[in-house]
Image (cartoon, rainbow, N blue to C red; front, side, top):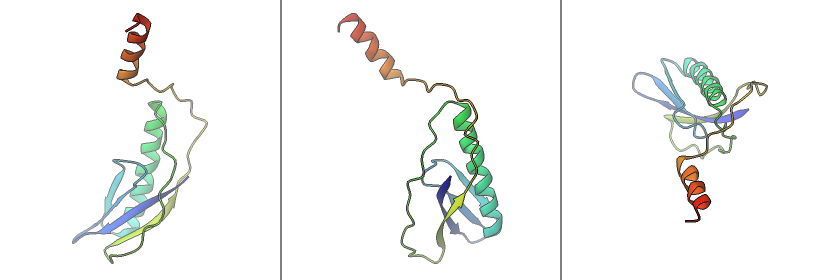
Length: 106
């Protein structure tokens, strides 16, 4: 899968995040190190989602206009093991309550 990654240069390091994978972030001393760290973080994030039976978000982001020299965006390709069995996603709590009300005729 190919996800958009936003890289930002700070005063002393680089950081990266993936808009389509909330809370998937990485930091590094160099841009190259940050690229490697975010690729590992993306793989780990997706593996955890699969193990927990969660839906893996499809890549939807497009390259933004490059307006700042401290921020760059590029696509990062990662290999995903789609053969891993996943649990059925849990229904949200409110859905379970709603179905109970329907059974009782409320």
